[in-house]
Length: 473
Ligand SMILES: [Zn+2]
Image (cartoon, rainbow, N blue to C red; front, side, top):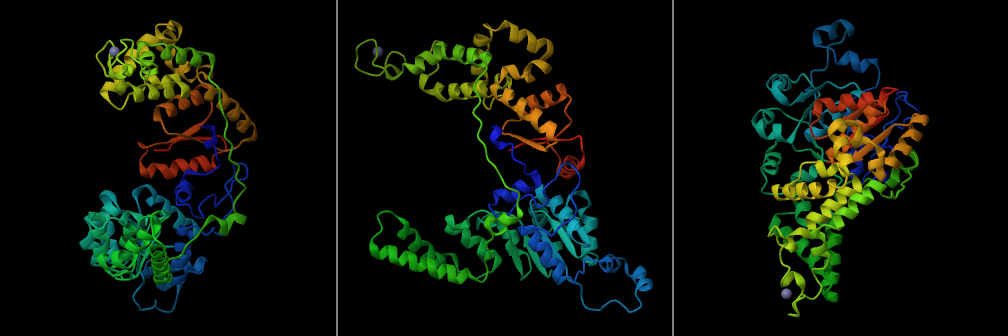
């Protein structure tokens, strides 16, 4: 979908999905690394500002000196360091953004940060217990595994990113989060919890225990009346009761809930243009598509709701044409063929990708044999040089459009993020980049979380790397 060629960095997409202030804190002019500027009000940036304030950071060299070990500190500063207990904060985030947090903290301030995760976590936990850091970063999983160790430390506050993960009262992650000893709890989320009142209760009950009462109390006082009032059969009375309950709920939460929408920072974001580009099929795709339509199976599908030839008065699919010549039920073929046609329309090479089920795979193999027997040229070419064949734009209308777009962006030295749902298609795009001599980076499910940040940084700061292939999965 060329409409997805939007100039947002992958590290930002997350916040975009939150539907909040998210993105492009550092709009890129050309390729050069941008000068530091005030953080836009993304939730992480707000949290970092808050931490800087409560840790009395000055944003100067003084912060760095204060972060030195104490034996060094005494030489730098004459007066002894304050004897009050240092404040320590815990940030819990999904692994996919853990290193992002570290990077953001390092970008916007001088904090002593420890990552409690992976095989070095035992050493890091010792550091935490000795209070040698100001901020400890960890994942939901590590928190669950090391709850006792983390509970042996006095935290000034805990900040939980993607807090909607605490929405299920029975989940182990929720139990662990509720068992964490800390009175000041801050949760960040972009999921509209109001849509599901039970989930809202669970997250709020973690953040401010008891604020909304017990689950049963909450159901009686708030969620039942609100839900009854929302039914289209609701009486006037139910409607009024529902609205009153909603107002009471909003009032109850008003001191504990802070909403941030994109509108607040719209002035700080670069203008965004969304364009949908319709791409017609290439001649090759049309021929393959037509061949699929002419198969016995599709003919059976297309005629399945016509009256049967035996004059029974029933539809063909319920009478003499229930199955194809392989004994497969025609009804079961609909979605398989929809998927096949979708693949052809995207890129014929996708037919060769591994399918989700074994049944689908045998089906696709059969179709390929049938279809490609008409295109021996393509088959021979993909055997000889799969590499160039598959990435040749003449095999896909979208690739043709993309090729022109990429040429245009290349001239402008624009940064391009190329998203695809299918990693197989990313393979094709990758082959295209290699064949065209374009330097690229790639992020998908198999990219290690430690690697992601390096890849994003290289993409952002290297002049010749202007394409990043990203899997939406
Ligand atoms: Zn019949």
